[in-house]
Image: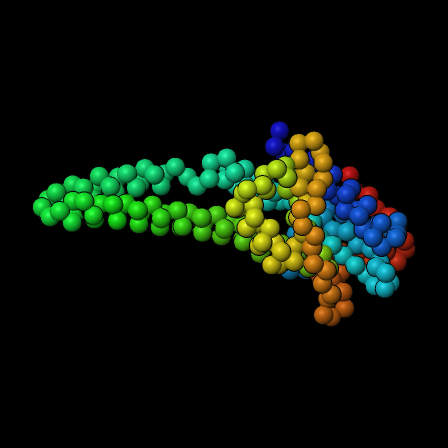
Length: 231
């Protein structure tokens, strides 16, 4: 079932972005292909290539490979927040501190030390766990930047409702925005929603198509005004 959901996500996103660029650049000649490798070995789940308003080659990349992993992270945080293990750990530390304080036979170690140590343990564990989740999000965002393109997209199979009052979802948007990456979500009702638009960048030398292993095929398709659909 998850695999079917992912395939549906990719299919709907492909159609949405293909139509988006067709309207944006007023062309029916949008080259769409899946699993395109760069010359450095990085793979984009899909690319969209066409000629822009300045008659220059334009290419956008789509990443869906980490969709399920990110969706689980956001949904779990939305429902449960951080793990319950931090409460158990804090309780164990409290008991251990009380026992240690009694052996030292001093009121400060009995009444103050256990509270301070327990609170410190809870806060530190929470911060470290939150930092770990953010690191996972940043890792995915960094992987997307390895896919050279004028615009880069991440697609996720998750309802847009999951982004409401969700610290990790807000951080995901922040992390993607900092890298100029757009985000689209596909919910259970197969509705594609643009959560964030990408930043358009210009290749410093030539164009981004030259970074892909199938450069010749892409250029030929655009120059010959071929229209490839992948559904």
